[in-house]
Image 1 (spheres, rainbow, N blue to C red):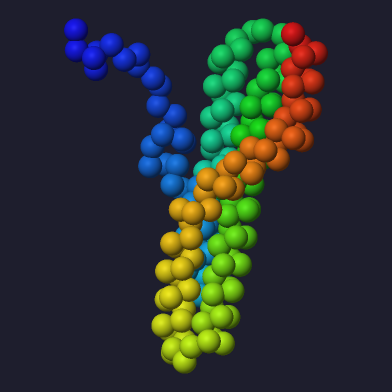
Image 2 (image 1 turned 90 degrees about the vertical axis):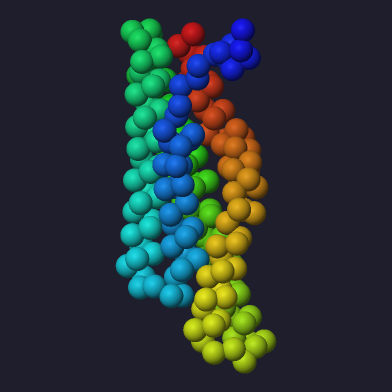
Length: 166
């Protein structure tokens, strides 16, 4: 038998396993381009990222509802799935990376202005390149930090609530 045929089929999570996942990074790209585009464009990228976060949270709530059927505590488990996904995604995909890229770009634009004689358009494009190149380096540390933060706080509350229903 072919080894490929032996693999169990896995369901694809559209929000985690496809290109849709990159919509969560829209605001980081917006922040990188802040020096070059109108602020309304940057806010638009936050709207895209927030829509992604909300859609993922709703999706996880629907999946939790299906998984728990008519079991006692279903409502609580669905609420936990939605809240946990929304909070995690809001922190790890929107707030913390947006702030980080904003500060990296603001700092680099300031430093380039103080240390170079480059024309403003060159400094702005350089700042955008620095911001974009920073994104891959901040993703995993932020994700792990948000995991730790939620495991140390909010998720402790969830587990206590889930124990009541078992």
